[in-house]
Length: 100
Image (tube, rainbow, N blue to C red; front, side, top):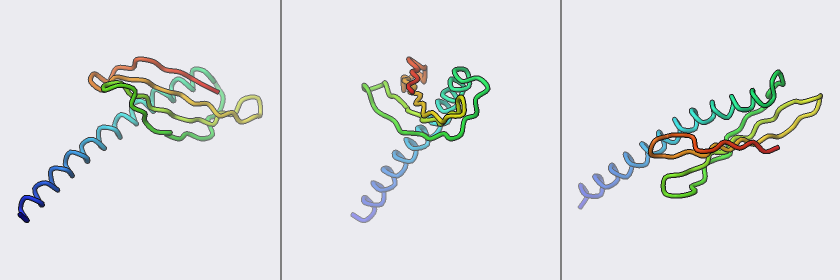
């Protein structure tokens, strides 16, 4: 009984840690994409802050990652959210939206 509990705990740990690692690498990849979009939309404007807002599951294979930036434009700070929608199976970007 004790061995079964230890094995089950180990399996759960491995499954959840690999899922967390995959989401972290996604976070980095799509964070770079969101940063590139901000630099393109606000050329020459300083980016003051950057924060990952989290992931929302849209369908079985489609998720959206949201990133909030604080951009300085014309001596005023502006909050801008970039939402990157992508497919989990092939990691292809399906849609990018920018909201002020």
